[in-house]
Image 1: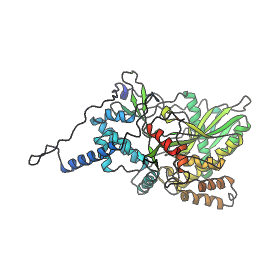
Image 2: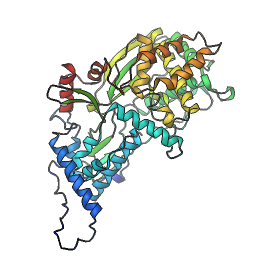
Image 3: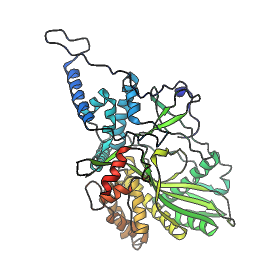
Image 4: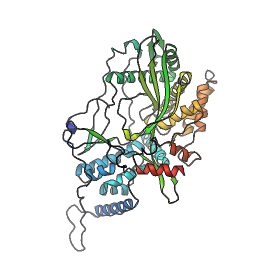
Length: 495
C-alpha cells in the first residue's frame, strides 16, 4: 500500500528505549500453601518450559538480527524494539501476531515451547525467524494440503485497473489513484506496513498500468477467446506480449531488463522516532533467516537473510519514438498472489535491504527475457489453477528466486539465486503436455524453460553450488552488512 499515512494510529508514538521495563515474574508456590488465583499446573509447566528454552536461547549467543552500530541510522535493531514492547499486554499480543504470521506466510509451525519462550523472553522471537530451506518447503506443502482440504483460504489477486480492451493513448486520462499507505499499530511504538516511495503519483500510475498490460497479455496464452485482453498502441492492437514489446522496440522505445536481488522485508516493521510530529518512521529489520547448514571449524552456522529476486523491466521512449509516450518500470517474479508482472517503485525499499544487480540484457535479448517470463507466468498460473494449488502455486512451483532464476538460466545459461524451492515435477508435466501439442512441439521458449528447470538445483538438500549461491545472496558490499550474523556468514561461506 502506498500514499498518505493514516494519522489516527501514529499521533502519539511511544519511544523505543534501549533499557526495557522490568518483566513480570511468575511467583512460585511453596509446598502446603494454596495456589494463587489464576495459577494452574499447565501454566506453571509452560512457565518452566519457557524459562528453560529462554535460557538455552540466551546461551546460544547474540541474536542473528542484532544490528551493527552506525551503519544504518534509518533503522532500529529488532532485539532492542522487542525488549521495549514485549513486556506490555499490547506487546504480548503483537508477539503472538508475529508468531502467527510466520506460519501464515511460510507454513512453518513455531513449536509450542518456542512460542512460550518468546512470550517470556521477547528477544527469542528472532530465533523463531531462523529456518532451513527444507522447513520452508515442508511448510508450504502443508499449506497446500490445508488449502486443498478446505481449511485455508487463498489470497486474492489485486483488482484490475483496465477494461478488456485498452488504448494506451488514453493512459493520461485514465483515473488510477495511487493506493494509500497505511501502517498498522501492533503495539505502542511498533508498526507494520509500507511507506510510499519517492516516485511521483504520475510515475506510479504508469508503472501500474504497464505492469497490468504485460501481466494480462502473458495470460492470454491460456485464456478463452472471449476473455483475451487486447492493448492498442500507435493505432495497432496486440494480444501477445512478444508482439507488443517488439512493436515498442521497433518504434524507438528502449527496452532493458536487469536481474536484481535484495533482502525480503519479511516482517515489514517500523517504529516512530520519539518526539517527531508528524511522526518520522524508521525501519525495524526482521528478515527471515535461512540456516544454510554450512559451518566453520568452531561449529558456527552461516545464516543468510532470505533474498527477494526480481527481473526489472525498463521502458523508455527515445528522441524518435512514435506513438504514445510513457516511461515505466515493472517487476517480474513469482509472488503469493500470482506469478507475473508487478509495478515497481510503489513502496519505499528500506536501505538495510540492500540491492545488487546480478545480470542485465538489452535489445533483442531483453525481448527474449520478457518472452520467457511471460511464458513462465502462464505456465505457473495455469498449472496452479489446474492442480488447485494454494497461493497460485507459491512455493510448490517456486518462489520469487525460482521464477527469476529460471528466466536467467534460460537466457544466459547460469543463475545464482538462493534458496531455490521449486518442485520440478509439478511444472514438467504441463511443459511436456505443451511440447507434445503439434502446434507447439518445436516451441523454443518452452524447451528453454524445461532445460533451465532441469539444470537448476533444489535447496531442500545440500548441493555442490549451495555455498557459492548462499554467499552470492548477500546483497551488500563488504562492510555494508547490517547484521553481525551476515558478516559472519560472509566469512564462513568464503572459507
